[in-house]
Amino acid sequence: MKILVTEVEPDDGRTVGALLAVRGHDVDFCHPPGSTGWPCAGLAPGGCCPLTDGGADVVVDVRIAGGPPSAREMGAACAVAAGTPLIIAGRAPEGTALAERATLVCAPDAVESACAGMSDVRLATRDEGPRQESPRAP
Ligand SMILES: [Zn+2]
Image 1 (cartoon, rainbow, N blue to C red):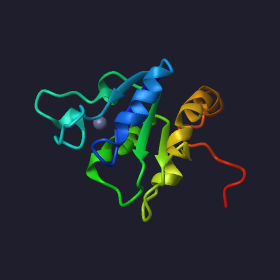
Image 2: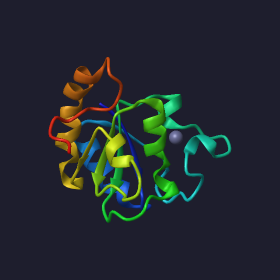
Image 3: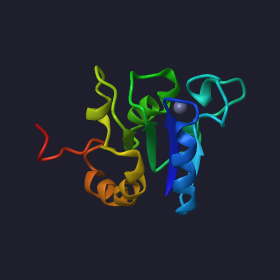
């Protein structure tokens, strides 16, 4: 599965990305390790956004420490805009609709199984867009 990893903190995505790559996923990052460039790589000089230029099956927003939304996780916004399923690995930021817009929110260490379940979710929601309505939602 083609997975694009974005993150709140510069190193958050590296561990999760490495785990997913070990499990055989094709992992790409919004930001090269150590990069502090534009929030979206597509806006960096000569850069390209892995989501709009290559596509991804799912975008994983890594938020290990939770906290307020940061420009660094702009890939999550790109995912919502592109209609690509979004998984939040960690705590969703308060005061945003990110959790609501995400296909699912899970613990960072559960992200691999969440991705494994994504193909089912995609089949189920193919005609309804990226949002999955949960019957148990309040
Ligand atoms: Zn982007």
